[in-house]
Image (cartoon, rainbow, N blue to C red; front, side):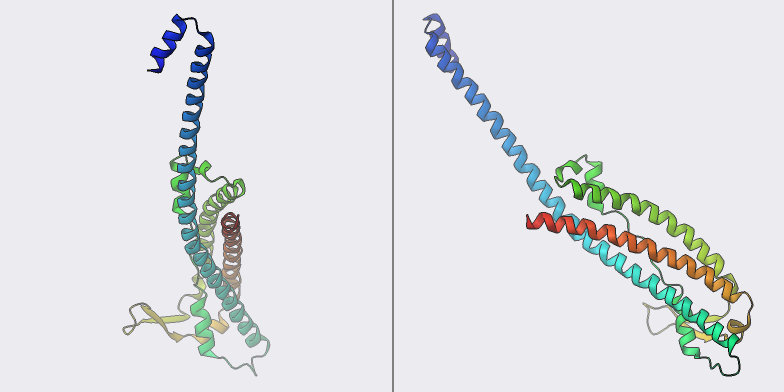
Length: 244
């Protein structure tokens, strides 16, 4: 209908009417493009919010995991220090030293504590795979996610290396703590059963082995604490986005 009207105005050489018709067409096209852009932007905003919600939920689990890992490694380091202090006390004061075998057994049981590093949130990997990370308009948040992802890879590699160091260091300690099967609690299949105090206090390689193993666990602790800092940086940006 509009085309017929424009044709008639051209035939009649009614140039003012032609200009008005042309203006109507241009405005209509402009409005159509703007509406399409608005719809696309609305969809992107909705998708961004879905991603942010999922990211927040996954990050809560990640932070909880890293906090648990930090506690585990700290407990392990403290256990190693307690064991080393006990050996030093025994060797410096053999006549007055009284071994607390229950405390030694508990500490020895705790030296193995640790946790595999957390990986990047699945939603981040999904956004990257779909080419939709740019939907996150907060550049600081995107950067924080990239930093966390890169550190997760470094942390996993370092964890494997330090785990091997820990296992190698513990070789002389084999046989000091004897476990037995726990038939009453399926969630804790092994429990400490017997502690070889004589071997622990007198074996010449034990102090060096414990020190070397403690160094590995201390490095693990530093790794997980840095990992936790990066996770909390993401959390802070998400909360800032929610406030704004």
